[in-house]
Length: 118
Length: 116
Image 1 (cartoon, rainbow over the protein chains, first blue to last red):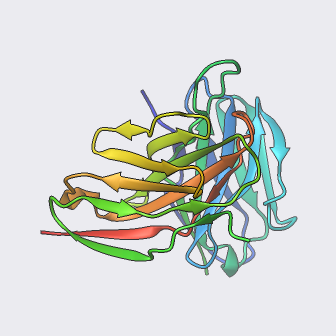
Image 2: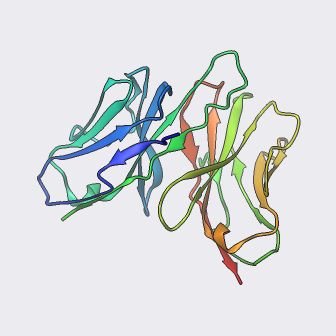
């Protein structure tokens, strides 16, 4: 079974440019998460979706960041304009919650996108 | 206040020895879940083990077990018979609330190095 797929794996861009990160969750999962990992702040949740609807975007650092989930199999995280302090590894994760079952709603992570903003 | 505390920034262990990675958590919610993830040098986050707050037994998955002490609010990961491939960062995480609440809070991680 395919896991969470992210593209690109590495992105190097210049300050001020628009950056778009892409994610395909595990088929059938109904939750999708975007995280950012830096040495200083560790792993931070940016935003998450349930059934394609944004539920909590309180972790999105500022208006330069936006995320969309147009359908159950695709999500994007966009940074416009990018700044050097946005350099980080961005992870997408997905999970499935089955109400009334013993499922653990474990989040499964993609390989991450390493973003460098010069 | 820190929700998840991992007090060991780094640990060095001889191959084949057992290792315990510490994790304490802080919550007033009676329903929560605790997760451990492994992040090798290649960067991916790999799910290892889960413990629910109402689970009566400590979780086990192969060489991984979770020493869950609810009164002490600790959820230590135990790796038995360590292998060189266990060298990685290990993160403890907590989900507060019932399943479906979904937000995970991560600790700062412990870097484990297995020496041959």
